[in-house]
Length: 175
Image (cartoon, rainbow, N blue to C red; front, side, top):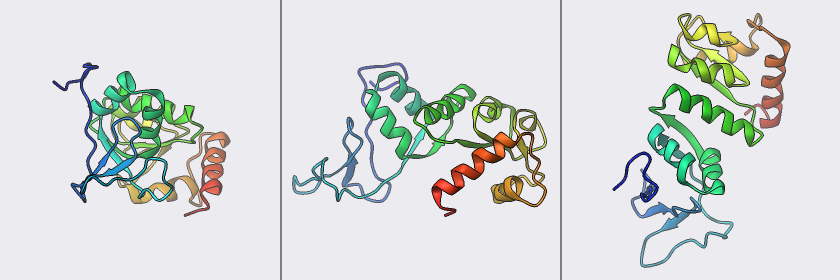
């Protein structure tokens, strides 16, 4: 039976676009289930993919998955939902341990630990989260992020925060 804290359970990874596409539970690389054909997990032409996961799955992966599987989950993860404040902060720390410059946005007190831990913490509210975040937006929507950080009068508490942001943007090529 699956449940948080159960080492005997397994996570099944499935595509929202194609029910024939699954991920190998150990490598987290795609395997296509059709006529017993699949991708060789060492093959360079494996389709690109991204992961969306909840806090329960995140916690299970941290507690029971092999280190390389957990690290692949972190790298391929783009949506992390329904996470506790501690899980959010741990996500930020784990990504930083892989060498990433991590930005985090939040709008409430439950985001404060991750906002403090992130290299670039941005509050989308002038309420509780703004106390923990180096940056605060006056508009509570995600479209204000670049304006908050790189705008003509950014509210910078330190040069280190702006430098971390600018370095990460140069590495990404301003895409």
